[in-house]
Image 1 (spheres, helix red, strand yellow):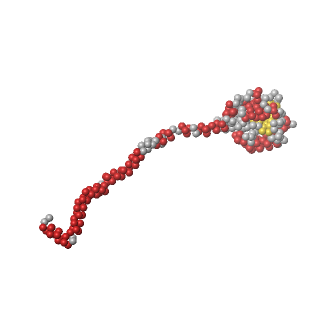
Image 2: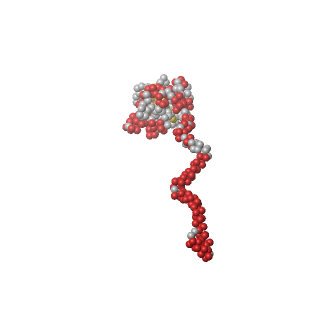
Image 3: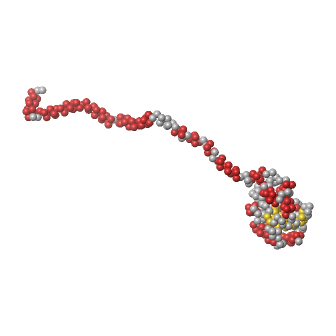
Length: 314
C-alpha cells in the first residue's frame, strides 16, 4: 500500500468510514469466493442454453417405457397382443362353419314328411289297390309313386262328391287351377258343371262322384297343362277301378274328349251310349265345362248328351 493509500485509510478511519469501506471490499472478496459458485450457476445456465441436455431431460420421461421395461414381464405381454390379435385366428372360420349345421338340421326334420315319404314309398301293386277301403285309397293316391308325375306334382287332386253315388263323373286330369284350389273342376268350370248336372236333376255333391282318370296334374316341359299319356293312364287305372267298385256306380259320364278316349282306352264318340268293362257299364261322353266356356255354341250339343245320360239312368 502506498503512502496515499495509507493516508486515505487513516483519514477514512478517522471519519468512521473505514468499516464501510471494508464491507465494500468484502463483497469483492465474496465475489471471489462466489466465483467458484459461478461455475455452478454457469452449469445451471448450460442446460438452459443447450437444448440437447433439455432433450435429454425430455428423453428421461421417455424412460417410463424403460420403467415399464423394469417390469420385465410387461414387455412379454407386448408380444402377447400379437397372439391375441391373431387375425390368423379370425380368418380361420371353422367356428363359423359350425353355425349353419344346427340351422340346417331343423329344416331337414321338417322336409321328410312331404316328399321323401312319397319318393321312397314302394309303388302299390294292382292287387293291393283292389283291396283298399276309402280312407286307405285316398291315402294311397296322395302318396302314389306309380308313375313319373309324382316328381312334378304339387298335390294329387282327389275326387269329390258322394261315395255312394250311382253316377260317376270323369275328367282326364286336374288343371293348374284345380291344383291350386285343391279341388277337381274348380272356378267357373266347376260352377258350370254344377249347372249342367242340375239340369238333369243331379246334385254335384249328393248324387255324383267326380274323379279324374289321372290323379296328378300332367304338365309339359314348360309346366303347362297337357293330356295324360298312356303310361300315366295305365298307372292310375287301378285307383279308378277301385273307385268304381266302392261307389257301385251304374252310369259314367265323361267330360271332354280326353276323358272319353282315356276312359275307353281308345275310340270314343258323343251321341251314343258306350259300354265299359266286363260289367258293360253304360258310358255317355260330353263336353268339358272349360270347352263350353270357350265355345258357348256347343252347349246345345252338351244338353243333348246330358239328356241321353238321363235316359240311361232312368
